[in-house]
Length: 374
Ligand SMILES: [Zn+2]
Ligand SMILES: [Zn+2]
Image (cartoon, rainbow, N blue to C red; front, side, top):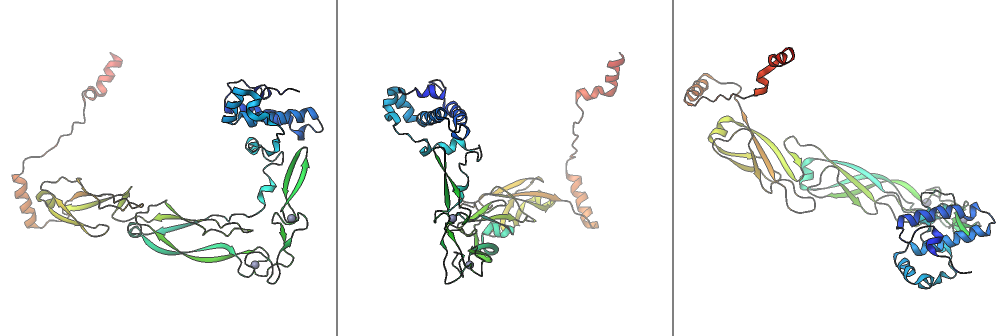
């Protein structure tokens, strides 16, 4: 029997893209799957044929060789075994467990421990300077009594009689071998006849663990630190999970953070703004001096470069932005009042008439009424 053309088998054109090839193969594989065509030899052949064609056409290099040299270019695929084909699970992913792929078998063996999350609230100052703090987390750790194997001291887990230690049971299904997790040992491959008293055979116990966390300067709300291996213990010799510490920085009464920049507002006597001078504002490391020039208007912002938050990855600092705000004295004594009046007399009239009316408005409601009634 001469080999059929791969494109013909997959019912696609020679210019079909990867997606077209994939979806066509998926359709055919479902149609001819041995589970749906029990005992039908033709369907089984079709199924194998499609799998072989897909293995070649889904691989860029092989497809190019096939396009140039035909079956000879890809070694004729003698003895091709579709159940060995690695792209298989990918094709069937999303179809659930209908063929028994990707189910059971995979769950056996060592399991990595779960990742844990810890929400940590810190003060603004701590985020600015960095801090080393300790936290307490409850987590599952390998049991000390049995060293994690779950068997009572002096005994050890024995090989599971059901699966003979493999943790899996294999079934022949058509020409497929399907592996399922062994029910007796739940995939562990070992059974415990005398469980450890401390952990009741689980191999892990919940413990309160105190950990030291180093928080880098510049950290912001929502950022997280990963402590590798500080999550839950793995089972059956699996590696432990990770611990994620999620940071919440309390708001500061004076500074507002924006990226690595810090903003603050400083109320000043209007005389200071008018005459100029030097003021001191709090900073992260030390108080900062800001030079106020003569005749500074209220709302003016001064930028102090590099005096903001440190960058969390160590790349310098943000800026400190100081906005000044004029304060009007709440109470004046007689003398102050007199002085201000004298001053006021010397100042030019400074009335601002804002132009809130534009030409169109001027026509006003009457103009519009006129339009309607002529
Ligand atoms: Zn077993
Ligand atoms: Zn134990």
